[in-house]
Image 1 (cartoon, one colour):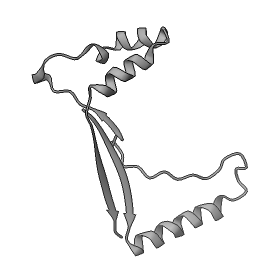
Image 2 (tube, rainbow, N blue to C red; image 1 turned 45 degrees about the vertical axis):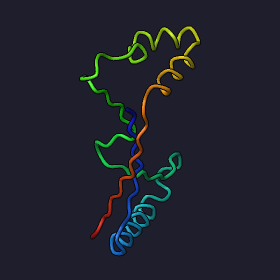
Image 3 (cartoon, helix red, strand yellow; image 1 turned 120 degrees about the vertical axis):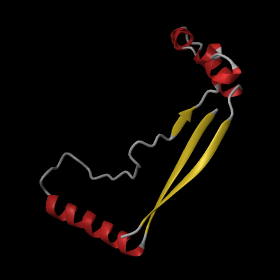
Image 4 (tube, rainbow, N blue to C red; image 1 turned 60 degrees about the horizontal axis):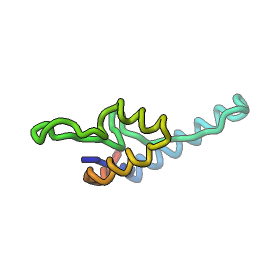
Length: 104
C-alpha cells in the first residue's frame, strides 16, 4: 500500500499577522547582506513523510519488485519502466489530507 499525505497549514488571524511581520522583519534586516541567495520558505512538519510504503507481513514475503537487487538490475539495464509498472499495478494508493491549524 502506498500512502500519500497532502499537508495544508492554516494560521489564525493573529498568527498570520505575526508570521508576516517576522518575515518582513527578516527581509528588512538582511537586505543587502547576501546577494547570492533568494529568500524561500517551506512549511513542513518535522518527521512527516509525504510518501510512505507499507507492507503486511501476515500475507507473506515481499514480492520480487520490492527487492532492491531487482530494482537496480532493471534500472541499469534500462528496464525500469517494467519494474515501475509492476509496482504501481500491484499496490493500492491511499491519499490523506492533513490539516494543521496554528493559533497564537
